[in-house]
Image (cartoon, rainbow, N blue to C red):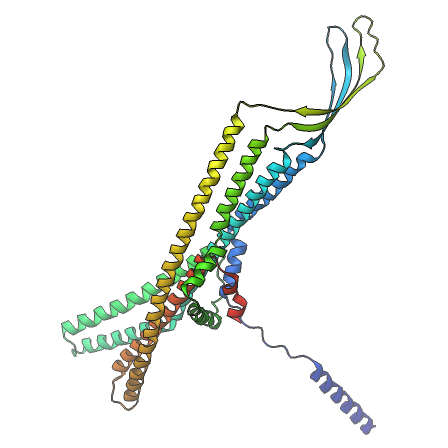
Length: 443
């Protein structure tokens, strides 16, 4: 009996171990972070100005359908009951009118072409606004991330300032400091605390600006490593292409150029619409009336009668050359858009060149700073070695550490400026798709 119990217990143990082996072990849920990609998606989803442009585009799409509906049969139904003291009048009468357009050179198709260009303009304006939102969000995110990276250094500076101030306060109490040295220590402490408070204000302001760009409250910390890699990747990409590459990309991807081109095409269609308004139109019509009558003398009504009329109508209108003058207005507007297109191209070229040369200056400054940081690292290492062998006081080493941390953050700040300037260059180029893939940058 005991052996049987042992066998059963051993059997359950083996099965339990087997089930435990088959049970998947899930990792802990990672802490949520706000990445730049998520911030841009949130801005696209939440910005009310972008939603208004989206509805404007949809309204223009429905305008196209409105213009095309002119080729569908137009039916009018009317029924009436009337009474009068004079002669024979219809007691009850119903009218049905049917019109079917056959040909109109200035009709639905001409107006549909104009509405189509309005839709294209609305879509391009929506894409242009998306580019603006993306650029604003990128700059605001990188500014905030740059400030967040300084948090540890600012806290260390605050602790160091408080420690130095307490030390000076004790020395002043026991008379080791004269009034000049004490006032000097108080001024240094006030300056350090002012830097800390200013940092807090700047940090809160940066959070507010990013939340305003996203129209969303930030509830998670910013992604650190993906953003650092994004900055590194942006600096690498900034060194890959010459100025002529960005000029070509801007002329292909900037939305302002196709917008003014669509406006010019719309004016051409409008010109043709007014010109063709002098061509006769042809339509089919059918009129049907049904009613009964009564006599004033005897009050007897007649039997209901039906009348119908079917035919084809040719119509021509002359408005005293008004449409001819309107056609000239549209023609001149088209020429204006053509000239404006050349001005926009020149303006875009100037913008791209200016941002490109600014970026080149920042890249040279970054290269010099990276070489200089190596020298400062050697000096800090020497200071640290001196502190370890008691050749350097604690205050002197703390000052050397602060200088080293400040140099590191100055370098980081310069890298962020380079990344921001490169993103501005892409923005001035209309965000070419090849350079705008966040997937390859973040992963």
